[in-house]
Length: 227
Ligand SMILES: Cc1cc2nc3c(=O)[nH]c(=O)nc-3n(C[C@H](O)[C@H](O)[C@H](O)COP(=O)(O)O)c2cc1C
Image 1 (cartoon, rainbow, N blue to C red):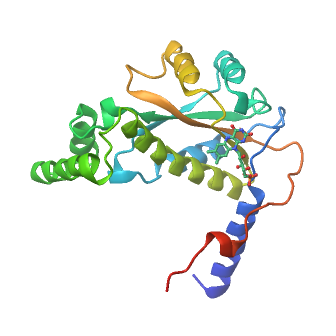
Image 2 (image 1 turned 180 degrees about the horizontal axis):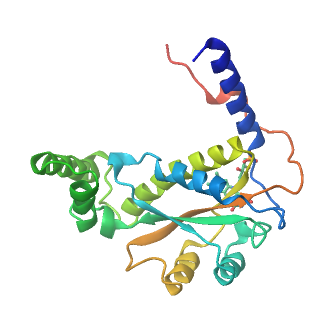
Image 3 (image 1 turned 180 degrees about the vertical axis):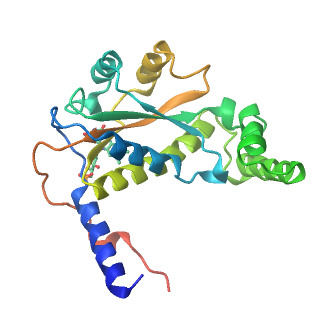
């Protein structure tokens, strides 16, 4: 890549970060082309996660009835549903699938990551230590879910940025009661057998009005160099 190409690319990326804003109102008449939404989903799929465990699932909610139920349950989704072109619920795997001795973990390492047997046992041991004493994730029922949930936010950020880079708007949504949303998703048969819990949601589509310019704390206030 030449110097000029790189500078151009950086300008484009920064422009996308300015373009992206939490879109409050979506145009009901504008739909994201299928290939563009597929691109956003690929970005989610390629996102990194701690130990590469991919402790998530992405539900693309296009069903009108389910959308209506979410709209009536999540205060943060007001103005985004039903108008948003696409709506994604990010699920985090629960303790049942993320504890070091869970069948999901073993299956993932063995059949997805295809680790050789001895390597896998060492990897599992490392995860066990990490969960038990590095991050103390076994101290409380919720902590493993919270850990998985944090991984989903990486995918969330990546999806929103990638969308912005191709001119698609988004709004992240955690304005909801977790228990109520889980009940709804459970009733719709979307949480398997307690393997998943809601983490966060995100609406995609196209803005109706232009947003205000970005407001952020001063750069020097949030970025500190330790030399
Ligand atoms: C994890 C997360 C959850 C959010 N939840 C909501 C929400 O439920 N409803 C909403 O309208 N905005 C929501 N927001 C949008 C934020 O208020 C917004 O990103 C922030 O004010 C910065 O503005 P900007 O994104 O336009 O730059 C959420 C943002 C994040 C990162």
